[in-house]
Length: 342
Image (tube, rainbow, N blue to C red; front, side, top):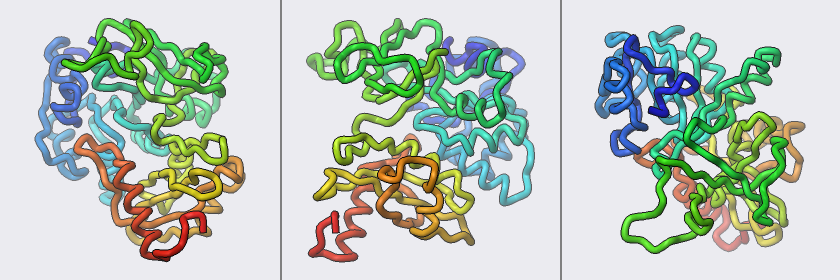
């Protein structure tokens, strides 16, 4: 019901829907239920989710609405660019599972596709937030609207959110102050099967998502980072997602991830790991140019490591633990006796 809402995928009997997300990932975000509920045509794509096959499937089946993780859409968009394909039958796409870089949203816009950046978890069954602009936002510049669409969005009907600061009190709704995101609602898990109450359910009646977020005056929530992915450097927090967004906007970068590496002086420091587009180059000098003037200098990544591909989970999410292992192995090769700080 939630994913069919007008402010999410706006599904109806006139649509042809493809869930480009595994069936085992919250039942493909509920789309196999939502499509027949509204009378839409349901197309099941199978396991071949590369750009060429998806583009062909969309065209042959007249697909109008779809949903999936950023990794899959990156493959589709890159294939379309490489083969001179400028359009698609798809009118609406929901993107979730991990944060969507603004450049990806912009690439869909350029093809006339409406993007719904959404937030979900298995425990929220799944949709909880969707980034749908309000009428007043039409007065903003295209860049300002894009920045809003890149947020995870506003709560859907049935979902209630609270953002608690380190003191346990609600944070200011100014889009700057951040805290832990808790949620409750009729389709939010009240507990885990055969498991004693844990940290996720420590606050009675609420589920702690593990996300660190901000919320603005209009209720738009933006994930700053996962609690476990924040880089804690010298007593300050550096947001890995923000660093990844900046890197992914660079023309030579296909995909990027930032991990926190142990540092003898600062506790942790950010390191950028990138996949470079074919025929392109990316150096540490380029990295410094990318970040100069966009964030505080002390937040800049300390290093850049180039890899052929990033490890992902079966759901298409970047696997930060494996990426950290790649970084540590690389440092070990460079100087087995050196400290990371050196």
